[in-house]
Image 1 (tube, rainbow, N blue to C red):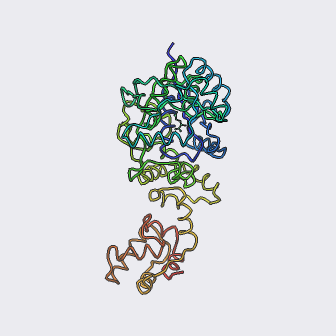
Image 2 (spheres, protein in one colour):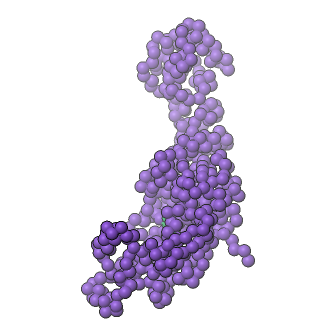
Image 3 (spheres, rainbow, N blue to C red):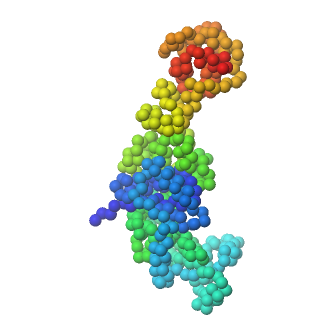
Length: 445
Ligand code: GLU
C-alpha cells in the first residue's frame, strides 16, 4: 500500500507568525494537498512560560485567513502522558541519563572549552556518575534532569531540498530532553508526535538541520524510521535580515490588519526562491500541483513588501465588485463602483478605498497652493455638463493662458484636487467630483 503524505506545521505559540513561518506552513500544506494527503497543526507549547493562549488563537486565525485548511490540530501540552510513556522506554533501554550540573557549572565548562578553541560540547561527566554519587546529589537536594545519549557518529539522511545531509553528532552535546522540573524540551516530544501522527514528511527551516540529525537518532532509539525531511532556506527581508517573532513588521496579523489579500501573501511566499512563476494565483489549490521541493533554491529567498504590494494590487483589479463591496461594508464604508473603477489599478491595498472616498466625496485640507495659478485654473474650468473631453479642454485652456507645462502644470492641480502628488488619472477623478467640488478645492476650501 502506498502511504498518503501526512505533513505538519509545528509552531511554538511564543509570538506572532511572520511570513517566514508561513513559508514553512505553506510548503507543508501544499505538499500534502498535492498528494490529497493530510495536514496537521501541532502547537508546540511545552514551554509553558513563553507559550500563550492568545498566540495559539492567533495562529489558528492566521492559517484560516490564509486559506490553509487543517485536518487535525494537537497541542503538546495535552500530550504529556504520551511523552512520559515513550521517555520511560528510553530510560528502561538505558538511552538517556540523569544529569546534575547547574546552569552555572555548565557555563564554566563551556567557557573553558571555548577558551581552548574547542567545540563547547558537553563532556558527559554525569553519564559516568556512580550510583552513590547520584544518591549524594539527590540527597543534597539536586533534582536530576535528563539527556539523550547521542551515538557520537554521523547521522545521514536524505533531504528533499538539500539532497544527502550528514550531521556529525560528535560535535553536538547530548541534548537535554527533560528539565529538572519534569518539563519536556522540544526534541523528544516532536519526535514522539511525528511517530504518533504517522508524519511522512517534515518540511521546515534549515535552522533545524542539526536538530534533524539528533532526532533521526531519537527515532532510531524508539525503533522507528524517521520521516523524510526537507529543510528550506529561511526567508529574509529586503535587507537580507531573517524575520523574527520579535519583529512584527511582517507578521500575518499585521498584514491582515493592513488589508493585504491572503492570496498575494501566499503566491509571493511560495514562488520566491522556487521554480514557481511569481504571479498571483487564485487559490492554494492552483499552486499545489506546481510545488516541487526539489526545485527550492538553496539561497535565502527575499520577501519584499513592495513586491507583495504589486501582487496585491494585481489581485484587487481582478476582484469581484460584490466581494469588495461586502468587505468595505464590513468596515462601515458605502461602496461606490464609480470610485472603485477609477482607483482600482492605482491602489495597492483595499484600505486605500477609504482615503479616496474621502478625497472624492468628503473634504480635505491642502496647504501652500499657488493662489494666482489656482484662480486662473478655476476661472477656466469648463461649465457642466462634463464628459470624457472635459479634462483635455480645461488643460488646453490653462496652457493657452499660462506658461506652465508638464509637471509644473499638472502637479499643482493634482495637489489642489487630491492633496497628493500621485494617484489615479485626474481626467477620471474630476468627473467623479464635479464642477462645484473642483472649484472649492482650487480655492483651497
Ligand atoms: N516548534 C518548532 C519551531 O517552531 C518546530 C520545529 C519542527 O519540528 O518543525 O521551530
